Image (cartoon, rainbow, N blue to C red; front, side, top):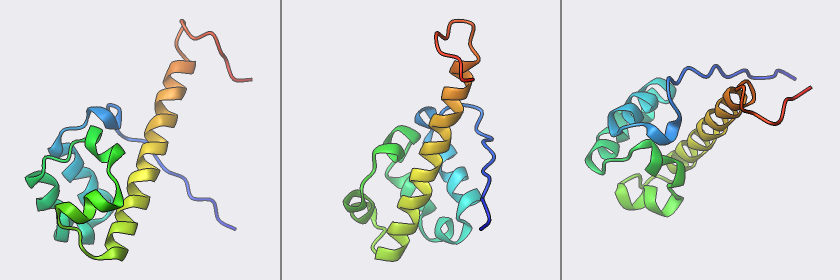
Length: 103
């Protein structure tokens, strides 16, 4: 079994992304889906804050009508949110003000 490693390259947490940041993320992670839907993300001003809360129904409402595309986007969004959250937790655990230190 191969373990996939994800490199966290975001210079700031996902919730602070602009719509342009979200578009760039989509182009980098899923170029084929970006070709089809990046303009919709910009048109509907899908920022990082919106992206982390978006649902399947909302993706459909903004124009992502293909079920498989919505599922692929949703999985990619969840993975990104997870790794963004993990990155923030790691930064916090290294802070001198952190009360918890992993062993």
